[in-house]
Amino acid sequence: MSTPKRRLRSQDWFDNPDHLDMTALYLERFMNYGTTPEELRSGKPIIGIAQSGSDINPCNRHHIELAKRVRDGIRDAGGIPIEFPSHPLFENCKRPTAALDRNLAYLGLVELLYGYPFDGVVLTTGCDKTTPSALMAASTVDLPAIVLSGGPMLDGWHDGELVGSGTVIWRSRRKYAAGEISKEEFLERALDSAPSAGHCNTMGTASTMNAMAEALGMSLTGCAAIPAAYRERGQMAYRTGRRAVELVLDDIRPSHILTREAFLNAIRVNSAIGGSTNAQPHLMAMAKHAGVELLPEDWQVHGFDIPLLANVQPAGAYLGERFHRAGGVPAIMWELLQAGKLDGGCPTVTGKTMSENIEGREATDREVIKPYDEPMKERAGFLVLKGNLFDFAIMKTSVISEGFRNRYLQEPGREGVFEGRAIVFDGSEDYHHRINDPALDIDENCILVIRGAGPLGWPGSAEVVNMQPPDHLLKKGILSLPTIGDGRQSGTADSPSILNASPESAAGGGLAFIRTGDVIRIDLNKGLCDMLVSDAEIEKRKTEGLPPVPPDATPWQRLYRQTVTQLADGATIRGADEFKQISKTPPRH
Ligand code: FES
Ligand code: MG
Image 1 (cartoon, protein in one colour):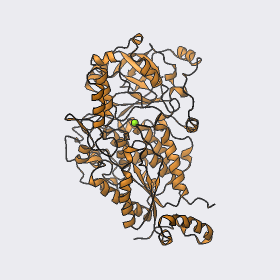
Image 2: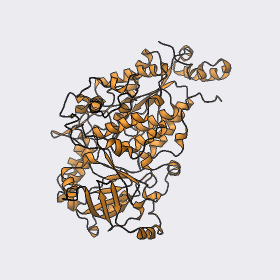
Image 3: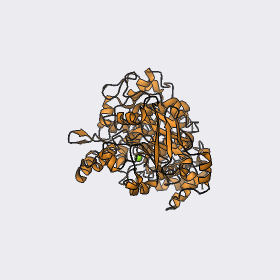
Image 4: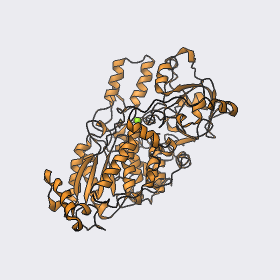
């Protein structure tokens, strides 16, 4: 084993001649499960394994098994593993939303990494927010860190048809509302989408964020897409453990890897994989804590022109297994590199540059990963919009269907421009109560608006903007209406919504002042979205105050609301980004 470049941080706990009393105290309790003082005083790097799996997070649960291979890797490379739980984040189950807990998990992990004797850390990730929260914390503490994704579930099948996580829900609820399937069939389709351990097998937020970690250079090459149940996943766990020790010895830290160029690479990869709209706030948050200036308009400037290359649901046809076998994230990055759309010089946790990592990683299945010049869709990134309803919102163009394009965006002479009558809902309860109310008289020329769904309003920000049309339109075959909201939508949704609107209604954004019946004009060419209401009328409405939001239900909800920024800026904890590179040893008590 080579020697560390500098005295290890953990030695200040376990091998500090100036403070024998404290050293004795720190050492003795680690003995009670069989660790020896020789190990802890050997000068070997102590590698934390931030365990995100538990019974309460089924998407990450197999990390409990994988951690055994991580430990083997750490030991074989001359380190000492210490596994500890991180705050669980289970997307599907946490109410009102797991988004509330991303910053809580971040805070918790910062305290653990800063306050305990770790020299480096393996971040186990999977379910949506486990990845950004872990990387946000690793940046703040700036300890050598490496991501181990848990990998997606195996592909789901139902009656000979691929059924993908989440996407099957949004598609089935339309079929159910249109009377095409029974309740039982709805449930079976959903259950069949989850055939094994792992996270969502679509290109939802989980697969997207793990792809982002790899694109940023924070995991080993090919890590993101290996299905949870494949043998390669365990092998990746072993190699990740080994590499964590080397990162400590070479003193390679997140701050060396997470540069602006790395984030721009990630934005481009997100477009090419048809990634989740949740990548926008999460990458903004990760950049903020990494001290990297990433601007809301970077999504348009650097991401919009990139074509869709991955034929994976919800934007395409296939699921995680086929994507992995076709070459996964390295094959996507290889295409971007050949097209001159990737900064190949970015350093990564492998110790090599990104272009060295992905050399020779051309796709092996062109049905699933398309060549750059024969893509699934041209210009498939996020469109950034603004106007008098908000200063910033995004639209995922890769999921705009042919039917939607023809109905709303192809009027001769006005391509990309449409106007509609607003139907305004105050939060998702209101939407569910009233969407089928005949008094609203919703037709195909309406635009559905939801507010009170942002970080302050919900609180946490809700995945509710992908509102489905009323049943009578679904029965006529109109499967989506234009939707606008200050909340988010699931990464597995295939709705062309305008979402993440900032500032949100509860922060006094323009959405607070629109009323049902107002006309909204959307001009996708100019990136504009406005209510056609006079300034004087808007000023008058402002005197009537903001729509009400529910009270704080827990202490953390109050603290969250007091500190959170808007989705455009990543919904981070205001001021937390001032704490940079705090890996130096905290004072003893
Ligand atoms: Fe956990 Fe999708 S719900 S990964
Ligand atoms: Mg989600």
